[in-house]
Amino acid sequence: MIEIHFHLLFGLDDGPETIESSLALAEASIAEGVTHIVCTPHASDRYPFRPDTNSERIEALRERLGDRVTLGLGCDFHLSYDNIEDLNRDRSKYTINGTQYLLVEFPSSAIPASMDEALFRMIASGIVPIITHPERNHTLVADPERMVEWLRRGCLVQVTAGSLTGHFGKRAESTSHMLLDKNWVHFIASDAHSTEKRPPAMARAFEFLKTRAGQETAERLCTENPKAVFFGTRMPDQPKAIGLDGPHSSIGRILRNAFRR
Image 1 (cartoon, helix red, strand yellow):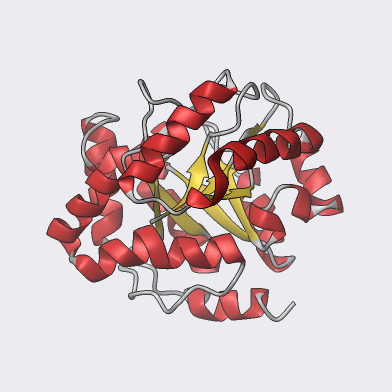
Image 2 (cartoon, one colour; image 1 turned 30 degrees about the vertical axis):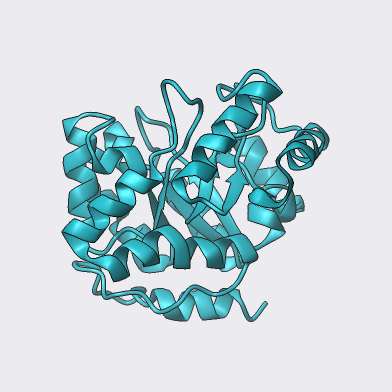
């Protein structure tokens, strides 16, 4: 399995505080069968994004972990004005391993209408936004249809592994199942922060997916699609999403355009 949303780097945000805690978190993920992890520190007003420090921390972890897991680098990108302006100057600073794919996190309390235009501009520039854990966002749980036009235009969706099995409460659990049943989910990731409160949960999520949606879906959401993101390649064809018919509803076409650039 491959993790694309994981707070592994120590001393940067609300993830591990020490290198020993980071190593314990990585070991827990390796034990679950994870082979690749994208380290995704927050890029927000609360947690400034520090590329040089990120590189130093990931190299320290690579030295200690060896070849038992492959580490990549991205971020948990918050849609602030300053972040968006900096993204326009240098997208590779924020995207996953410098590719087209970008994890995007919305405020939990409200999503301004201006966010739509920000996403559509990203897509027009060749960036592929991945909306993180909508099932844990109060606004999107109350109004999942808010996502329809984002998905039609080419945004992808990552659901948290623990949400599928109730770790984040009943509303997150039921919303994640609804998104899964509609084929609105493209990735499962743990969004792990610690071995205690926010541990990896990929193995349990994989087994849940096998039971609910079948082996093929479990592999697609936990391995095949995340692999394309990690290595910056075009994702394989996806099953038809329910309720997205419209003039901008071909994700395959949008991804083909992104990878022509």
